[in-house]
Length: 207
Image (cartoon, rainbow, N blue to C red; front, side, top):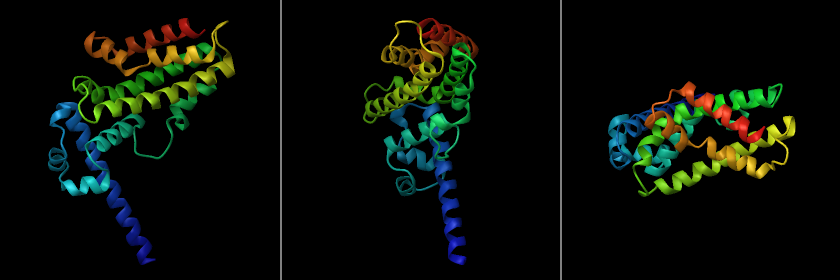
């Protein structure tokens, strides 16, 4: 019993350390350039040693992806995005329009979460680690988009003559973080403006 208790204590301490590191990483990533985001700076910000960061999460690029993942999900629970309540709510929609309304809201929520992390990275160019990071999250976005639009087709149908792959292509383009960044940060749109625009574009493209 004592050993099990000690193991639980260590696991909880490890989770708390990881959460503190990722919170510090978010703060650094959203208030500085990626070039200045270093393990040394992160260790100082989080109040841990550099080795603790390597042991708990990994190097700079791994910390970046972990911070992105936690921010995207809203927590550090091992639950797939497609299994989360806000995503699953789309599957309860009564028709295609309601489905896309829920989907546009989901895209808005996700973009609001990760936008502050991604905006400084666009200026970093192809700095080491950035290219692979963006390729990874684009693959993941593609998977999520495929799940959603396949569900839309199976439950409510697509507009006549529209095949699944082009529908996924169009949606994956419309919901891209670059478009969110361009419209909100650069053009000054509100999140509500973006959500309404995205819903209209999705309806026009898919239904």
